[in-house]
Length: 152
Figure 1 (cartoon, one colour):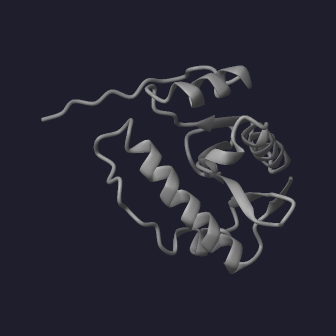
Figure 2: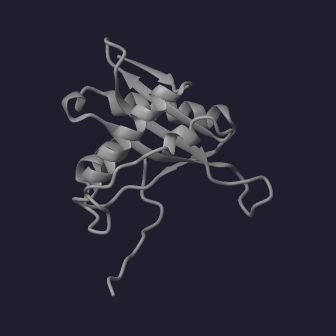
């Protein structure tokens, strides 16, 4: 298994397929997400942008089995002191889970964040997604803010 930066359209399209799977799996925790939504063209547009990075985990057959997408969410003219990097998407195909792939993807994102000068590395996770929450806690993330929701 290897982790590499996505540099071509074919790999970006495969990451779109995995993002579709992520949204479907997250719909179990967020009833506002469509469980049949199909992502089309998202990473095809994002993987080349300056303040973004898309990492792909590939198996020995060079097939993409997971991805992590990070971006800078602050700018030089904003109110924050330091740049903040956001892990905006992480997914590993179910048959490859519990093999350390997500941890390796997150570590690549942390390294990228540090290399570009970010001092803060954030992510969003649904509190009902206990497996993801445990992984992030184990990797040293701590709760910073809580988001609240009211159905009307």
